[in-house]
Length: 278
Image (cartoon, rainbow, N blue to C red; front, top):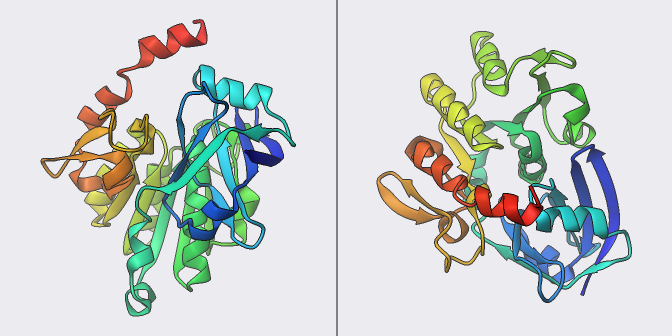
């Protein structure tokens, strides 16, 4: 059993839980994910690791209810309760983890986080900061009330840029517009990472390609069973078939067929709606 040590609503729709999982925490790396099962009959829910503490033996997950199972996790589990299973770490770590100190020394990263995708950006930025790499972060949401992880990022990045669609806080506009404004002001980046809704990652990629910035994107939203057996997270990357869970979850955004991925991302909407009672 995996005990929930803390539970916090980050905004009206997003919940953060710190879970006791010492073996996972001991080997977790930025970019990886885990699978949570609430009980013996529960659905397998892939969730990107949003932080880990090796000393405390904990992992952090961030959940946005979008279906019956995630709604159950948020509504029916409290501090002190336990999940039946938490499996991980799964997937491949972010590509920069394998870089030498000499390679990292010449890097300057920009991260673009949208909505729930802002949370898994955090452990990547934290890792780069700990290794002396310059990092800027762009966080976007529809409105000020939906911004998450603002204070956490302030302690681990060089510059934090907040964007809201309605202009209620920070830069008025989407994250790609903020990136273009930074580029126009003379800011230069060697690498970019975007994590968020599929459409946001598509346009982040188009913007970075235009600006000449290599970009990695996380395709974790496609995953179902997380082991490569179901085939639900199949996608085309550079004309080759890949699986988000075992080959990723991060890929070169310029090589991803986003239109195909977005179609696949919606393939279970009818079943999800029925299970959710909609």
